[in-house]
Length: 94
Image (cartoon, rainbow, N blue to C red; front, top):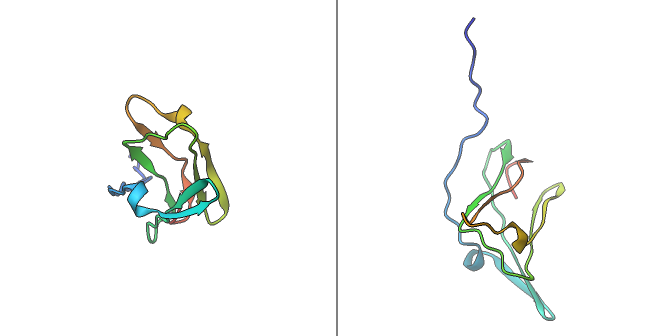
C-alpha cells in the first residue's frame, strides 16, 4: 500500500526587524517592546529567528491568546549561528 505524506507546515518567509517595528513602552528605568504577529487563517504558528541576539539583562517572552508559550528567553540562548526557534503554538497569532 502507498503511504500519504501530510503537510505539517507551510513556511512563510517574513522579514521583521523587531526593534523599529515594536511599540515601545517605558516604565521607570525599564522599557519593553510589543509586536503582534498574525498568520491569518493558520492553525498553528512558530517563529524562527535569524540574526538572533539578545543583549545581556534583556529578555524575550512570547505569548499567544492563551498565555505565555516561551520565556523568558535570555542572552544564554545566543549562539554562533544567531538562530532560535519558538515552540509551535495553536492559533494564528503571537
